[in-house]
Length: 323
Picture 1 (cartoon, rainbow, N blue to C red):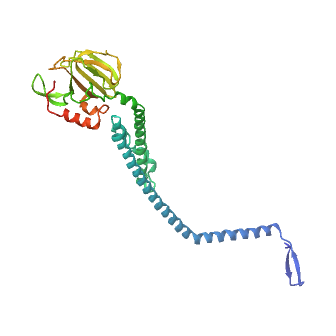
Picture 2 (tube, one colour; picture 1 turned 90 degrees about the horizontal axis):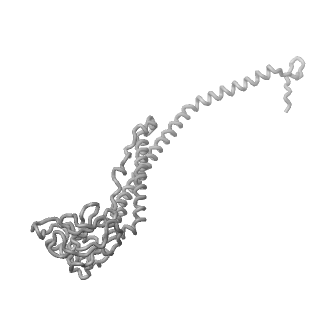
């Protein structure tokens, strides 16, 4: 389309050609620009309140959705905490119990789980500030508890690797041959002392047999004592089995091992006798766990059937006097 402009001349009754100068062009352009700006401001003025309302509604929806999301995450974290507590209980009551291991220290599990309040200043002024802090604190607590549990499991794995060695070392047979179960003469607990005739704690079991009968190591270990220095025990052999276990064999007539010697379960370590405070030939046998005397009868699981074990329990519980 031609950009040439014409204007009607009533005097000549003709259309005269109009020449546009650059000023006319600039005025025309300015008019269009000003008109566009004015119209834009008018439209924005009419739509501002609507846009503002929509914005507030969107923000309110986002804030509400954030609160719901945070509550859901907090609930999930609490579920994770319950699962972790269950794992910790299994670790203590099952995994470690199988290996007679001490529980992982409680103070290590809870160390530092309180959280540092200064760490959460960055959340101040946020929407749902307290809820955000709760989520952050719970995450920190779970992180530290998981680290502690990981360390505990590393220890359990180490115990598993040593299981075979531990099973060889735990004292788990009777110290003399007692196939007919007639050799057990006195059990663990309060017993009448054979010399002083008063009730005293009897820290082991007494097995009778003829002098010179073989006495066996009840588990793998190292001989830490073979002498007659302990009052009342007479000639005594003490074997350290590791894993917190020691066994004692008292009133021996002769030694078959020396201090520092490594022994296996079933090795002959001494001969039965009547030395020390004793009223007849026998071996006084003790099992100590972490320094405390425990009832040896509970460790005879390697050479007795369930029926024989029940019979030994019954014999050991009889109110006899020690020898």
